[in-house]
Length: 235
Image 1 (cartoon, rainbow, N blue to C red):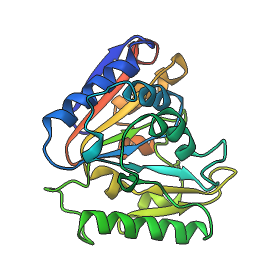
Image 2 (image 1 turned 180 degrees about the horizontal axis):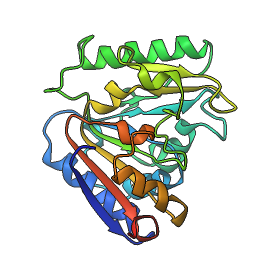
Image 3 (image 1 turned 90 degrees about the vertical axis):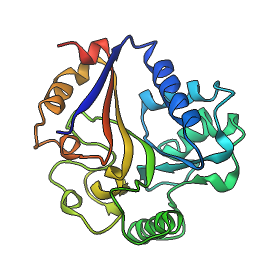
């Protein structure tokens, strides 16, 4: 597992501390700032905090999604809908800076291909360069089975090294679109957000580098961070 920076804090303080960390990175940067977003309850609280940071440079920030359920964007299960409610509807970000995964009017495989084309167009190349990460920050969740994004245990997508995005069918009730390891790893900062006592055991395995966990196989180009509350992070 790559060298990590770990922050352990209380549940209430976690979203605000991560928001402040992200704000510091964004304001210290120059030019375009790119964030890959995660779904889930813990990220939602982070996004609600980000919406209150009035000095965030939204005009030069671009938002992408690490994975998405293959449902319409107004569906209750949609990661896009969650981010829109918690963040997008409250901030002055240009519409052209928002890059959701398409989920209507095409098949899951076609949606993954369309998102890959969009990523490549934004990046300006068909090949990822480790010296020029696609994302400044990638936020990641940690499932109780060790999955992150929609990289689930024992799925074929774990071995995918060529595609930037792929459809995942059969792992859950609804199809998913996920960024693959090479795309998620093309990040200056990759940050796991982990909260709750039920995540303590799987977080310990992640820290130990247990390669049976999809999350533990992630090797970002830059720094790996773990932000956890004291319930999840207590040794």
